[in-house]
Length: 417
Image 1 (cartoon, rainbow, N blue to C red):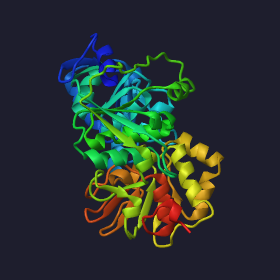
Image 2 (image 1 turned 90 degrees about the horizontal axis):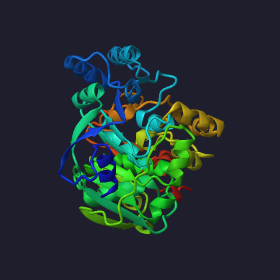
Image 3 (image 1 turned 30 degrees about the vertical axis):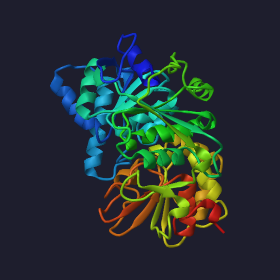
Image 4 (image 1 turned 90 degrees about the vertical axis):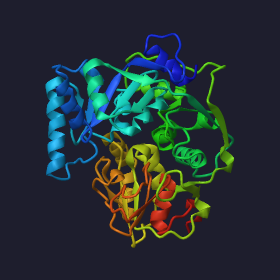
């Protein structure tokens, strides 16, 4: 079996599962946020049960429109807050919250070998830990909160092998953008994307989280990595809860196997209006930008901020644009403060925000006007994703976004004067 099949078999009481099979799966964590949580709560109440199946396995994170941007978002956050207080579920208030897919593993709430479902499509992020994470609708989440299990069709698995030595400034964001550009936004439709190879072995956990996060942008049901020593060490620093590490069998059956030589991959940029519309930054041409956003559940971790600060240090953001820095959690924010990164950002002319999804979904903290262009370390660049349907979003790594903020145009960091 593949890694996904191993985990799903263990959680469905079976010795073996095969692609296309319908199974009932026990879940280890059920997640929702301030947008999807209220819908799940409403549907949960319709079921007729009084208590969630296990309050330690239900978490709601108010991260999309928080700190509350208006009355409607305040009411949503209030509803989630009160439900969690009533049920005893995990809840993180503003001041202690972070973007959900940065926060949960920081807090030791998700572990290798587990099944995590969330009413957010980027729940696939947790595959970086060797878990099976996937997004579902709020009605499914309501059912899982009541019962502790879900039904699922076992996905097939596509194996992605990365080998070779990467160029300077090339990392996980470039690996995954290159793959999505290669196979398309439906290239892994309802498949588990299993990542491996020597280039993945050296890749940081932060880089793996970035890649797993964007599996959904290729249509993937999940994106998974083997939990190695880096992963296990990270987890043991955060919790003493037991967990199981699963490995794919040597003779695992894959739908297909795709190989990439990372030495051939330049820093990537995804042009509007699809994450698959990628090209090397050297082929970007002269694209003038109005805003740069560095953060999100894709690239809002401390490693990402370090890279951005490395590029920005001693330089100034172009006077023609805004550069917004959004740490992914309070912990990331505090670490960036201790390392002097926040000072670097402010000295360069950046605006630093409290942790929030903010502009990534067109929520707040950086909405685009008609005709404006932004480069962002976020995961989606659909029409109107960050504001006006007449705006444009270009996706990149923190290094390219920071360099572009200095230049005023999309640029390779190596081309800065």
